[in-house]
View (cartoon, rainbow, N blue to C red):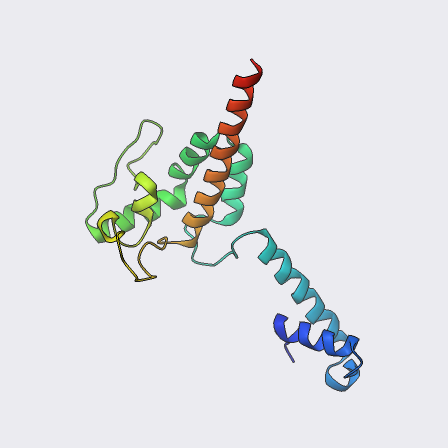
Amino acid sequence: MVIQCGKFSELLKEFREGVIEFNEIISPSEIVDAEMEFHEWHQRRGRTIKEMDEWVVKMETIDRYDKESNGYKDFRNKLYNDPDYIKWSDKYCSDNGIKPRKSKDTVNRVLLAGDSWWNWKVGNKRDHTGTLDKTKHEFLNPCFHYFKNIYDKNKKNEEKNKRKRKKIG
């Protein structure tokens, strides 16, 4: 019997209140499995976005680039030079008739994120005003949303540290 996280928390609450006994519902080994699943789910939920199989660049790779990078611009360039991203970019651009660009920091021509990340989103800038369609402006892939969040955090921290150094010096 597989218990979903929400169901487990309901059962745990009832057990603590004395309404039910666990041995009536599931075996002790299933309780341990359910607890592990429950805690893992909370850890993933508390961390960031849940990893998915269809990510262009894996979460571990993005996290590694975050640790290895020297600033937010270097972090972005590491993604642009990632072999999985280059492969995805080539396919996406050829399928959609988009001309990839080459920046000064990239080795190959790739789909750059663009102004306000529009190249990585569904729709375009003109769709932005007044649209009620929730599918518009979602990221093409969950890894881009995860990447953007880390990029924005790093940029904010870097600018904050720059302002502090300016005040001190």
